Image (cartoon, rainbow, N blue to C red; front, top):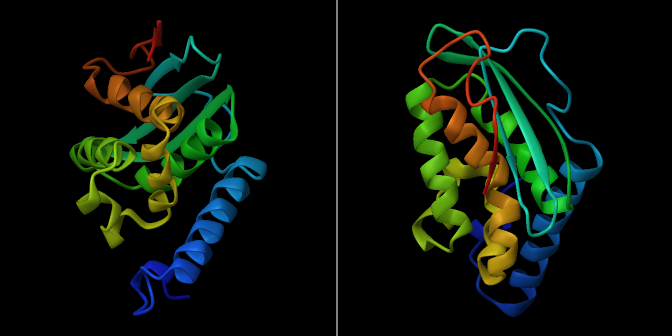
Length: 170
């Protein structure tokens, strides 16, 4: 299926409404049927983040094959945006190198803050569904919570699960 945002009629109010509906459907689907939900038995890296303003919590665990993310799982609770974003993250970074995942963290955070170039980047795939949070500053934290945990985990130099075990707000 072609992306509605790439069609010639994109930018017209009716096309914008269809795009918003598709993006809302993607977010709700990831919230209702999260991908990558659950814990890993023996993660190589892990990190936790919580949002003290609303109570959202994410615990992210990664299993690596050398420098490549072999598996990624999350546990947590929170609003539809934080949980959908975590679900989408698990699909987006599986199979990526640490460097690619770090670059995707930066790109996603830019998208969530309203960066038009990131929002128009077809390589972002379903993550583009979350670009609307930029209009709601309080929701940016929800969308970027799991991504902050990923950034924490990737910056950790130790393996076998010692990565950022402490809880961090953000």
